[in-house]
Length: 445
Picture 1 (tube, rainbow, N blue to C red):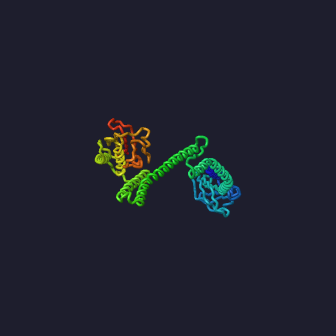
Picture 2: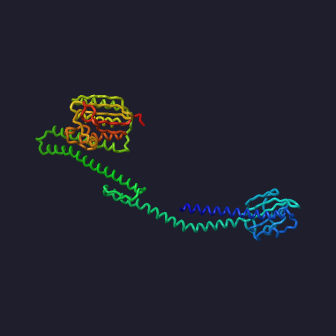
């Protein structure tokens, strides 16, 4: 609104200045035309200063030059002055110019219209000058008037805009206060949504969705901390108990037995801490390890051979080239966890397979163990999740003794732009669990 008022004021001033300027030029041309017609009829022989006198002041003056360019007759205001201009247009032609004239002690700008004319007794030049001071004065007065009028108008418009914006932003401010209150106390509360379906309503909906995700993340974090504390406490309690027994009852436990317990539980503790650190890295979007070309088939073959030599199991290896871009150590850890998980629960055999499917590289690990019910196939990738059935037993130690192995697999897959899942077995020879990792192929944008 303020810009509109300013633009309107400037437009009025410009139009007024243009109109007054044009009127001044027309006035000078009209006065010169009258004198020109008189000269064309009877020449300048009997003309005097009173015949060409204008308004009687310096605002309007006329000067007639002879064929030699010298003044013949002049307005009393410029009597005795040299020619007002050097322009000498041909008969019937005119020139228009603006110059500063020293008239009556002032140097005002004048609009000069100069016309050439042929009289009965020779050629003449008629100069009609009109002062531009009234134009400048009128423009200045109008500018001052508009400025004086604009101050209250701009103040009123600014106040109106301020109130309108304040009123429009009141729901936003209420939401801000509500979010600030919720973020410092209880994330289960939500922002009250205003009526309607405008931008404010959509903003409130977005804030509530964000609070929902924050509450979910906070709950998951608290569960994670509680579960991690419990898992860390278990090996520490075992070590503490063994040390206390060794101290209070030296004959009940030999030094070698005590060292075995401490060594075993320390290894378990170190493995758990390492898993927690790896999970933290997979969650950190700013931690970007260097990626190189990785042959998943080579990693899968290596892990399958390791399982074959470490366990009394039949290991079927079916690998086809599958190249991805990623971190070799992390991808190796993900495949190792799947192979170890299958080896722990298989009855007689496991199968490791790699290949491609469209734009994805695929790693599949199957076993002939008890399998996983469909209802648990998503939940098992959560952290610290164990199932109390034949699939999970206390002897499980590798790649997730605390329920972290499959969570690590899912985190690494997601970190590399893919995903891990547990699907329905399709081969009767491997009726147990069927895990699959899908990753973008290296050549896929």
